Image (cartoon, rainbow, N blue to C red):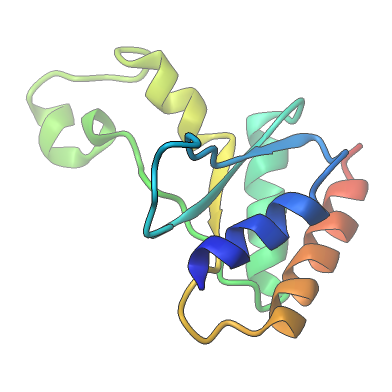
Length: 122
């Protein structure tokens, strides 16, 4: 079911400035997450898009925050720019809703809301 949800997102996002989780052809995934990576947006834009989606009732999440920026690791001496790729990922990606029982009409709302919000930043 979640594989079909991911494919529906993939089909609907064609042409948008984002990448969606890629699963190799020879792999059967449980599609625990439907991760998108926004392309060509600033970190501030990402934060604003994320916030606007949440404000519109779309349960986007960030998976995963760079571990080295958590307080425990900062106390150990880790700081920003130590693991730049993980920081870039955290400022450009988000997870969209996928779960058993997610109806297509709800996915359509996620898709339309995302398209509308993104269009404000293009």
